[in-house]
Image 1 (cartoon, one colour):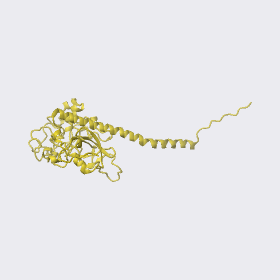
Image 2 (cartoon, rainbow, N blue to C red):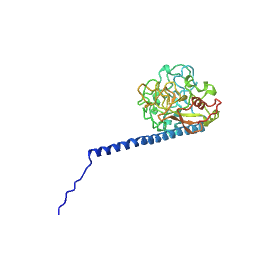
Image 3 (cartoon, rainbow, N blue to C red):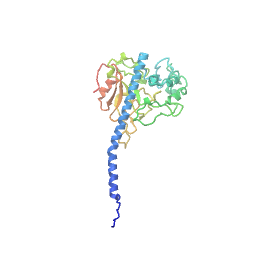
Length: 325
């Protein structure tokens, strides 16, 4: 009896290429779904952080019967004393929320009687109203300003985490002030953002040395913007950190719209999030940005929302009661 040897047949080159092509097609089909799932998770995390800040604001109000100021005695304001008697300069109101965001030890380390950033003499005013050096030594709080806090970071914005050092709107210790992706709803059109000098029917919830209370929100807390989202790259100027502000800015102003991008020649989309200017609202989420409302609710508002509606949502007592779609 004779046996014929069995021949083992392997993949031909063509079959191997077909298999590779099928795998590539499957990856191409699955990758967008994976990316969308990841962005959905990042967007949900971002929404949760806005909610945490909104609740912290209400807890602050419960403790002090007033919301924190959007900022304290901004250094740029050399025209008149923004708040006589204050010795703290360029403090972002977000820093005052730290005890309500499980950051009491960090809050206790901050010297509330000195500056939170360095300023050139010409950019700062003393509490007497004259252009003068900062009260105190900004280096005192430099270490604290560099602490990166997850609650202030949108996971979709993976850009620069610190603003760098400098003699104007910076700190003396590297890596510089830590960023925030969340800002107060404020007006960028008035001199130095001084809240008390603005007409009542034009005020937003926050501004320089603002003192907004729940009873001041005549248009309804569920129809008034409180917290807005932003990216950390702007086309001009320097954006703020959670502990201090940069340039002439206190918070984000929705009046110019949402996601107004400055797109250089050759770009097809705003990959790094260059907002058109400082103090503007936007995000790296597709189609809009998150907002915390005066009642603590969080909404994702489309960048295509009517500008008049956005303006009326921004003010606290303009007499127009509107609702989000």
